[in-house]
Amino acid sequence: MGQAPRTVRGRARPAEDGRHASGFVRDHPGGSLLVVRVTPRAGRAAIGGERDGALLLRVAAPPVEGAANAAVIELVARALRLPRRAVSIIGGGRAREKRLAVAGLGPAEVAARLAPASRSSCQP
Image (tube, rainbow, N blue to C red; front, side, top):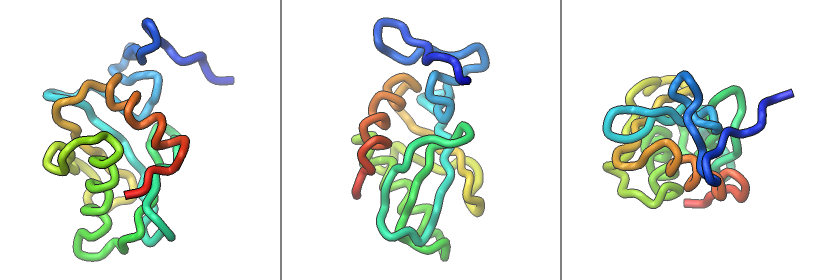
């Protein structure tokens, strides 16, 4: 069985390795690092929860000429209520598992803003 989420007055608390209770978000200079697993060519864009330490994203765009990457940035930026320029892909540009840098928000705030979206499928 898994461990209970670590909290401090209702907010996510970092684990010893820099990760927070939601394992897909970590500390990163200037903001947060978000680990996502992308399913391109989905029926609609949505955030589908967490699996194996990655946030599951579905995007309608195909993985051709950066279309899926642009859709990932758009989906995450909308869910976090940030401009697209605050979200960038820093690793895995051609892979399903990607690392995203989120500027200006700490890991606890990223996890808090993504929690409702991952429960109710955020639409762009």
